[in-house]
Image (cartoon, rainbow, N blue to C red; front, side, top):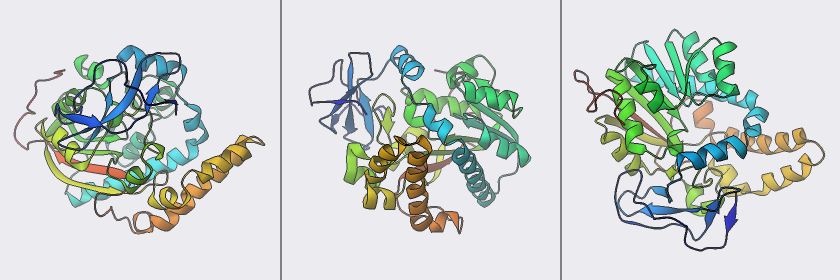
Length: 340
């Protein structure tokens, strides 16, 4: 995390990117900069919904530069096996939710699909499963090795080019990708335009109201640089953002995960990471194994109701915020096809 002493960020402040409220207040005295670039970014909190927004908003060119030259893709390569397990666990979760809502198998779209492990799990379960994500080695693996239907590019580009058929997806998922999106209204409008009548949206994001976020603030595991996590949602803010696009919110809840849980945050804090860095000097696998071992042990203890009994979370103070919404059953979405 690149930080500097507190001074005002360059460029204009923004309102809330989540709900559109103009009134915001500083959330932190820190500001961050993209390595090799001068502009500085910070977080502001919405006066209405409480969500956090990056100020100023990073440009597409700035983000393309950062992801192309400085983003740590090695983190994902080191955790490839864990991400496969996570994808299967997410599909089991999704399957239970679909069953509870009486949904039948149909066409699925996973936004931000990466390697496609979640898409592959859905495909094996009998769904016509699609994914969309930026072109990368990960999407190439999904397309070429797993033989999946993965559209490469932004969601907007995929919709406007006709590569994703409008109003035909019965189930859309977005696992920890919406917080990276600057154009929030466009993002949810595009989703609304892709959902079939009565289709379901399941979204999961870091929770701005998590106990870890409140107690550790900028040091929390999922409070990343503002230009990386452009927004941090509260349940109120996420509900408002989804509803603005004409979708009906059925439920919001929170839960812990293996890489973000209260026991790891509150009891150990940064200690495992500090020890892991020292062990990594001997061999990266030692550092990796120690840090992830502590996380998994904490989740095994603190998240037993999730992994052992398949229960979703209670309350709205856990690390991951989830929302389930549906499109109108007998009407088109409120936005025309491909509107940006």
